[in-house]
Length: 220
Image (cartoon, rainbow, N blue to C red; front, side, top):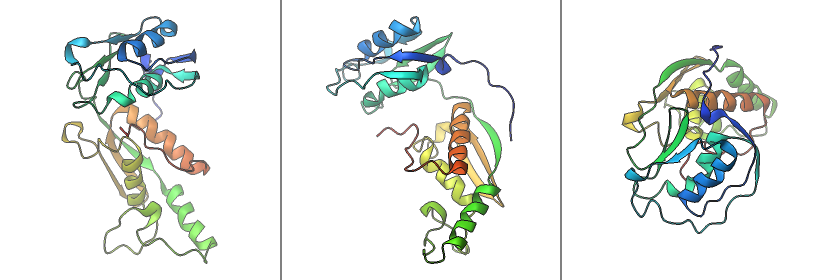
């Protein structure tokens, strides 16, 4: 429902090759900056000793053609559980790793998604497969209201979006995110980055290639 161009973001920069060193936050920054022209910074003033402790897990294998933001999120994943976790923000052309409360809450915007084709195809699939019992909790296993007949609906798609795209943020008051579905449409209020991920996720649903869905932005 939206065709406007997005402004260029440093997090969207593509790194041709990258070998992450995740033994410490300083090592993460140094390994990325070797190929990213020092665009990642570590803000130590918001970090305590527990946040900065070394990671004993092995570093991931080499990455190719990876977005800078994706690489940084992957590299810092194991630090998200310490005392509220590290936070990432983009500021003055750089990506900054800081402690809890260091990142400002991203701006949100509302968008309306037409999911009638997804709902229609889901319903047609059950029609073509009469020997497969209809799931008791509706499409994708999401909980439906008591007056729903169990047919696939836009509410199911909205619930699936909340369960896959940054699942820990929808019930987090400071973020003020929500997704509501009705009559083949889903209204979503979320950050621009989340909307990009939602567009990609819906594209995968339409192509039927999503297989096992991995939660985007999940801390585990």
